[in-house]
Image 1 (cartoon, rainbow, N blue to C red):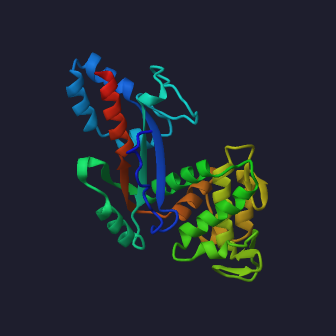
Image 2: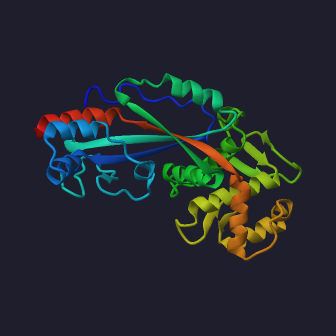
Image 3: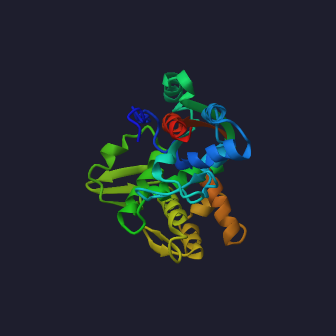
Length: 295
């Protein structure tokens, strides 16, 4: 990695929890230089200039399945899956999706204003989306971060939803000694702490179960939750008997229609503005290094 790369990590600590999603992908500069010089017939210097100004699409940067010249890898010394080039030809592109919220507006404006503008090291793309899409992007990022083989993920998933639901609460303090989350039989809404146990009102607890199910349903048969491994049918039965479906006016349809309606209740409806921040520092540094070798 170049000495100039990643001089300073971006600080999102002032943003409400659950409103920033990170996407990381690798890009093969050998592939890109070959495209510009061999296929498009550009001289190396012209290709270098074009590549520096190149800006991938949001879809390319955030897609679950990378396509050439992008690729995903966990290897320490990877080779390009397309041209077999070594690590020195690879660049890392980090993209951060900031979900527009009223509580986070001040932090977002301050953050974007503080980004350096020289050499277009950062690019910001504003996209109008819907709350369901934003919810599933958050869910996908959470799934990647959690270790579903470790039982501790259940508590972490519950905390993640609570942070997203109540971003003003100091959840670090609440979870400092919390060992488990339980459903309260006397709370009508909200939560309360008792020793190492965090009690949630039935409706909030059921939302945690739903998030846990969505996170783990493709991991093994059924989805793991605080109430054990549940199939979709079993989850719906529990939510129905617990009054969750009736309280949210989700009563009709087959199990898949009910699931869609529950997700809509959980994610919310309407539009939301997403701010994609593309960190191009590593890309620019590695492109310069690649050009010096290519010419």
